[in-house]
Structures are given as C-alpha cells and as structure tokens.
Image 1 (cartoon, one colour):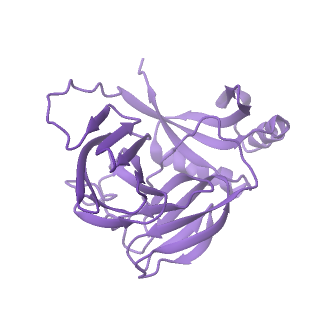
Image 2: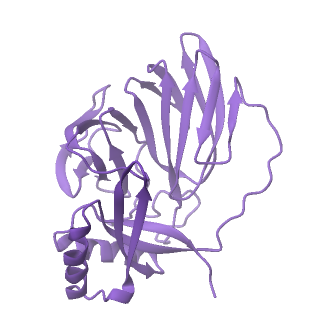
Length: 296
C-alpha cells in the first residue's frame, strides 16, 4: 500500500503533561486500521458512537488511520479530561492523496488544518461537508480539513446557527457555539465573532506563505534533563547540533515547555522518512511540522 501521509501538528502553549487521562471517540467508516502513537489499536467499528480509545494519558497523541487502497491519514491531537469526538470522512484515494483534480501517480502536497467545536448545550447536530454528526462529547474535532473557507451548520432544539470558518495550514480553528445567546465565536482564524447567521461581507485577501519547510518534532517535554540525552541520541542517528533546534515556551502559570526539532527539510516525503527513522530509534510522539519559510 502506498503511504500518503497528511501530518498535522496542533500546538497548545503552556500545556504540561500530567497523570490525568481522557477518552477519544473516533467516528469514521468501518474497516479502517487505527494506530495510537504507532501502536495498532484495532479496526474501526460500524458503531453509531464510533470506536473508543479510553484511558489515554493527558497530552498530545498521534493518530494514524490506514486502509488498503486509500491514502493514509495521520494527525496529532491533544487529550485531556474532557472526552473528544473525532470525526473523519472517508479516506482519500491512494493514487493522489485524496486531492481532487490530481492525476494518477502525481505527488500532491495537500495543506490541511483542523476544526474543534465546543457547544452550550453539549449535545447538538454539526453539519460539515454534507455530513451530519450528532455531537455528544464536550469536544468535537474534525482533522485533515483542506485549507480554505468552510461552511458549518449547528442545530440544537430547533435553534440553527451557521458560520464560515477559515482553515489555515497546520492550524487549529476553535469554534464555540452558544445556542442560548445565538452566538458563534471562532478563534485561530480570521472569522471573528458573530451573532446568529453570519452576514456575508467582502473580506480582504489572505496573504499566502511563499513556501513551506518541514521540521520533525522529536519531543515536547517539561523535563529539561531529558533534552541532552535526546540531543546525543539524535547525533548518533546522523543529525548534528546545527540540524537541531530547541524551542522554549515560558508561561508564568506553568513550568516551561521544551520542544526539540530536527530540520529544516525542504520536502514533505523526506521529512516523513526522517520521522520514521527517529520513531524506529524508540522516540515517542514524533511528527512532522510544516512551517512558513522565506526563499532566498
């Protein structure tokens, strides 16, 4: 099976790992192999409630979904005390990575983002891309959403709200639906906050990045003592210090977070190969991070 990856990074600043656990509900077509952090968890079930992954440690986890003849989908998602309902449409065709208009065998880079929905009350119907989903958990997440504008419809007890959400590459668009006050708030994109049904208006064109480069995030930790052994292990794998980058995130209300990355890498498929090499060296939670770059 050809392996066509869609890698998505979702970064939550200031979130430290803890002993808390949470649940993921995967709503997708039956017969799809589901992997959690590289470990096979089973095949998706034809259940209305989806496939449950329970008792997951708090923090970011990597979900991979595979099916013979279809493109592979891989994304990272945060897990916390609140259950998360993950909704995935049919996997795209294997030949072109699921990108409409691509010719067979053509390598196409599909930039994607993610949409997260929270609502008051919790239970509502979310209609996205022609699919209606009954939201029953505190959080509903839609990964692998193509970059651009998307229309979403929300309904609860006869109240209908609509919103247009702008999805950006490797970014999370958070949607908060307040049925009691008939308001929809969107953060993480340029949609802003609106009441009731969105009014159409002319928007200024969004600046597109000139190019994308890739970094492989090797670890994200609050334990500074874990950094140096990881750096040394990466050197042994052939990644010298000048190809490593340490990012420190400081927050007055939480311990610092350290992110160790390898790069930059110009091509997505090579970055995926590097990520696989590092995973095989027993690093956990490795994923590819697309970032904006500026060609010389």
